[in-house]
Structure formats: structure tokens, C-alpha cells
Image 1 (cartoon, helix red, strand yellow):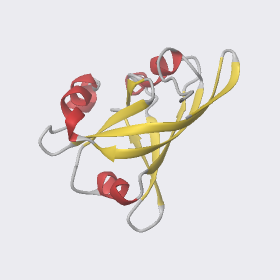
Image 2 (cartoon, one colour):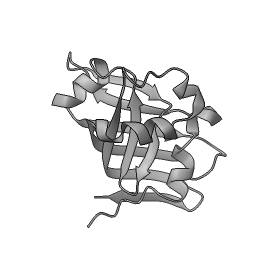
Image 3 (cartoon, rainbow, N blue to C red):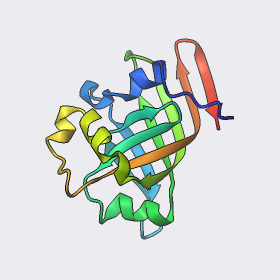
Image 4 (cartoon, one colour):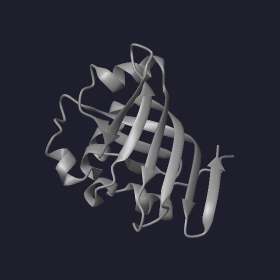
Length: 143
């Protein structure tokens, strides 16, 4: 049984973070074997144990990398925002076209303005662990 629960305060922090100027930073290993980071404004809570995001190019970059190296990490910081101040999240990612419509529809409008439904794909992240800090101090969840 998983102790991961992305709902509640964690969801308040993640969903729409980019609209508040606090985009989550994603880390993964690129095709050259180097750690790569990028900001992902489309990141959203998909359900209690999964995050999702929209990858703008289903043929290259991040999507290509996670096919062979699915382990990813996110970091988030926002002092004074809703929910936790800091989150460090680990998980495994995979492209999942079956959730394209829901992920695309739940993205913030600025991300939709830069996304093409035909060229992109939804990515589902199964969260393995979360470390964070909020008003009640430090916390940790793991699968």
C-alpha cells in the first residue's frame, strides 16, 4: 500500500504553480547520459499517486529519454504560496496517449497557447517519494 497522497495541500501547490510564477523544475537523464533539467508549467496532479504533464514533442527530447530511462525528479519552491513551501519528488515517467485529452484540458491556458495536441503527448508520472516542508514542518511520503 502506498503512503503517497498528492491531493490536498500538495495539489494546491502543484496545480497552477506556473500561473503564480513558480514552475516545477523537472530532472531526467538525456540521451547523452547527462542530467537534464527543464521547467514544466503543465505539471498537474493526475490522481492521489500520479502526476501528469504535457510534452510538446512526442518524438524527441524528454519523451524519447524516458522510454529508456524513466526515473525522473521534480523540485518546487514557493514561499508564501498555497500548500507546502518546498517539494522534492521522485518517480517514474512514461508517455501515455490514453490520458492526452484530460491532461491537455487541465493545463493552464498559457501552456495550452504553446501546445499542439497533434504533436505532443501526455506523460504520466508514478510518484515513488515526496519530501517537503510546509507550515507544519518537514514531511516525507513514499510508495
